[in-house]
Image 1: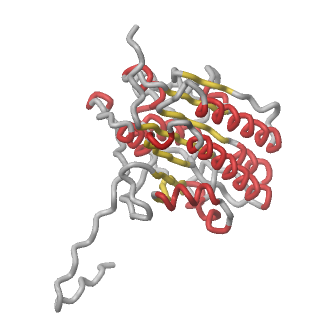
Image 2: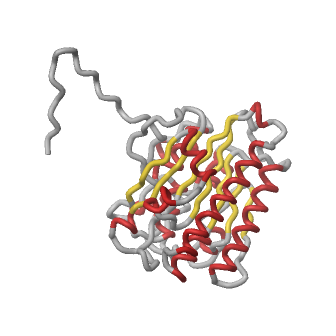
Length: 304
């Protein structure tokens, strides 16, 4: 068996926070998400017409870098998937590139062979932490335990080069209680957990020599009363925030899609995808800059 690839300077942390509405973020004090955005960008993502606005298909697209037509996850039961052909980035990096990888969270089909899963088939290290019951309060406790586990791993000797942390309490709160005050409070709690993860990176002994890419992503939105799966703007609007090498603070980026997350993970680790992977995503790229209008020439008039 071949040894693991030397760690090098580059590392990636992806934090998936389920079901966070983009339109509510400006109303909320989310300093840690804001810090990621300020160091790079925060951009909307529109769930494409072929993808149900459900957690299973959206997270599969995020972590595989291919659309539902390829990975085959069409609902929250993953039966019939093609994840053996189109694996998640933690599995591919561990198997193909011998990189240390880690995935942690509390939603069964992401991490266990249940409901047609798992989505994360074989990362270098995997932790599943079950909620004690299916309630918003139990999911908050679960996310606290998930965050503590991630902090321990990120701070320890395992030194994963690519990590995925799943936080599910926000989505569960919306399903039970709608998108009111409890939902907003859950978003604030998720941001505080993001802050603990970022602090764990900063406190690593060799942090000054490391180059971290941080990606924070949600899968879908929610109706006011809670719920998703339809095609309303609230349901199909997601978002990505990211910072790291090659991402200029505050610079606009080209259209961002869920499939781009995995593609950017590979790029951040300086890995050129094999064409046989047939990824549908591309790394996050700067938005095209309009050519300056010569002096004395009128600016073009927008059409439509």
